[in-house]
Image 1 (cartoon, rainbow over the protein chains, first blue to last red):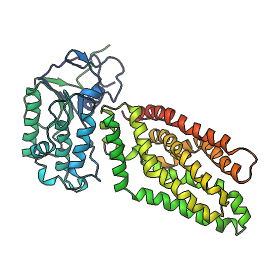
Image 2 (image 1 turned 90 degrees about the horizontal axis):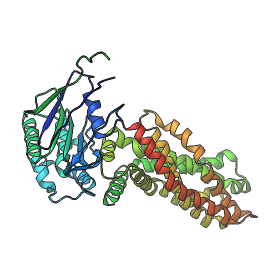
Image 3 (image 1 turned 120 degrees about the horizontal axis):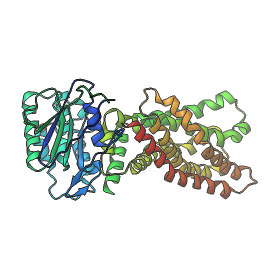
Length: 194
Length: 222
């Protein structure tokens, strides 16, 4: 068992940093929160405007894999995620694709096939997905992986904006993300005897 | 509902960019049918008698070549778990992906089948019914195949296992597809009996198979 008796809550505008050694269950916890993995016991509750939501409708998940189609260009990838995630939810201000591309310094690359991107550029494209559709909770698993210093600062900015807009961020990282997290949760500490 | 069509459009576009898989599958179908007369000998009557069954069996085998791509690529690059997090229920995701597999991979095989009938000396009266049965039967191939594709998604060499899971499920499609053609060529049964059952199998698979495929995906996307 990775962890038990784990309980925490997060309100709008707050952020949580998951810490722990390799294999301590950070990714597993994120995947439970996203609804991929069933928890042995217990539950995850997500409320927006007082209504309990399915995690499918209110979370962005950034995992180890980028989820980028090599056959598509940068803008095609982003446009698909925008229209796929954007449908079904009542959104008033969907940001323009060009603005999102510009924000992540991808505008010059927009017509480039994704298989030609470097690892860091792919990561930026993957993170750009966070902005093409609005979701309250961001689950970020090592989001700064492969990013250079400037892009890391950019990511910190984007997360800050999201928190200022009332969103929530739960992240795991080994590299400082340049953001003051409100809460720290350290996994993998000695479990008390039963 | 727009997410549903967005997903279909994306899968069709991906299939178009990746058309190597389709060419392989069509080429396999062609080559299998082309070498059969070499193995069976030049007896035209024998070939004509065997043609409906051979055309259907080879079509099923060719369809298997593209089936393992149905979910596997999306699983490998992480798109699948993001699609799962999207607004569409997993059952509808499976329906959309099976439907685009039919359009992009199985339907071209069905369109090729009458042309290949020439190589096997298929009875001249049977071309329209071959076209009709493959057109009606191939959706079942894609939808039932999605169950196998979902179950074998995490395996490195999923293809052979996929064939073992899926081919037995294709037996009803094969039996009624072939018997509808034979009813027209030799009789004495009515064509409509077999054809109606084939339609029923396809409709049932379109409703039930996405439920099973979704359950398989839930097991594998963890």
